[in-house]
Length: 367
Ligand code: PAD
Ligand code: ZN
Image (cartoon, rainbow, N blue to C red; front, side, top):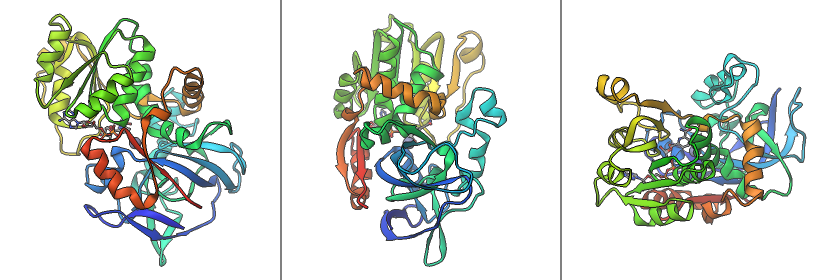
């Protein structure tokens, strides 16, 4: 099969012919129909998220089960599935404690392989790794059974793909991690594919003021379409001062950082009111440190700072819940797709993401 491979750190992706093995026990061969392009893919290319190379990127996908390995019970050939970038076994300590988004089975996949640490992809006999035990920039993937959620056949797979990362993460950040309340004021710093979903999550939760911050007016326009009530161009205005001006000098009830930069994390903390909540969604480089005054962050100001991994989601409950909201017209999914592309266009999709011209580019695989 032909897949988009990152050959080495800081190099363009290449479409390469790869060999794909049969699914092992507990594994499933999925025909990947669609894959969104997320900033986390780019973050592997530029080293923000360290991963071994060569690797097939892509972790926001949906497709159709083609073949199941020994012992697989959750899905069968023909099932339509949303792929989950975190496996959720339902049995480990974290899953039993209601935190499947940090399922212990994911630890083994951090090195670019499946649950046993090895990959099912190769080129000329050498291993090619799979991002997040998936690798949705290829038209087929062998993935763990616990990395997918069955969905109804009538959901378009390019729409379903987006749920796999951006929607679960963004909407989940507002509904699960932060628990935004009716009437809250919320600030969202970074209005990309994930941030737009935080905005629509905050809207669903009933936030009355949703302040969107970005450096591109194009993104701020999208933010309005997804429910932002106010916008701030961070390239023109001091974002924290502007948030204060919109919140009677208090700061927002809840602030979300959805970029992953030290200075914008500080902005999110400073734009939050006393007693408010800060949710960090953006993935920073490993060397980004946050240096905060203990007294004037946590104690006197009583702020809560939370990390948000995968929207604190339980994929088995939240995927159907999000699809229900979409069917009722309360969640925008098609609107997130700015461009439908082929796998050969992947480098251009990375450039578009950085230029601020797209919410999401979505790869439609040919088979
Ligand atoms: P994106 O590139 O589509 O969006 C990022 C947005 O931030 C863009 O609109 C930029 O214009 C804007 N931006 C960048 N720098 C600044 C700045 N200095 N001031 C204001 N705005 C700025 O990315 P995305 O939405 O796909 O992903 C956003 C982050 O979320 C990224 O770090 C990604 O790795 C992370 C992520 N986290 C999880 C998780 O589970 N926590 C899941 C998926 C993605
Ligand atoms: Zn992602």
